[in-house]
Length: 109
Image (cartoon, rainbow, N blue to C red; front, side, top):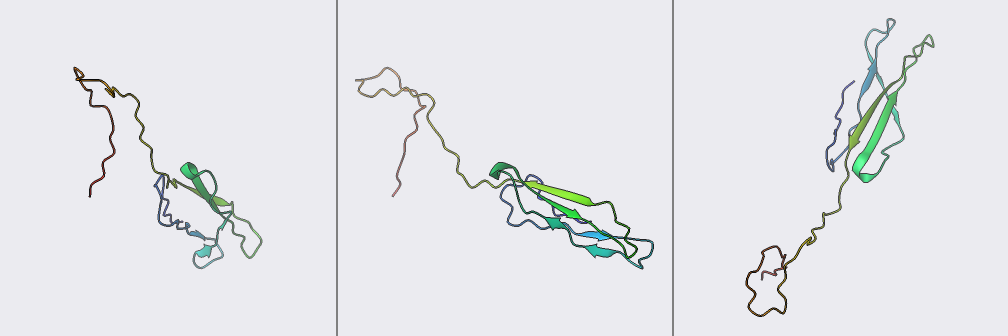
């Protein structure tokens, strides 16, 4: 099995499924096994996707299923900054001090 698990990556550009293969005493070489998946699930900050591989040989011997789960974050919401404290001297004439905790919006032209 090979894996391209995005393990905690934020906004991965693509999710590449793992590849599986099976070996058996009656096979000359390993065979590729196509996994099943229900697709991505979970909330945006905790996305998961599980792939499960099953294989049954020509003599109807079923292998023990193997599952791989990837996890990642889909976060497209911008953070919001707010003013927690403000010492705004609004309307005060000649304030003795002004604390520099206030956020101002500037437009640069």
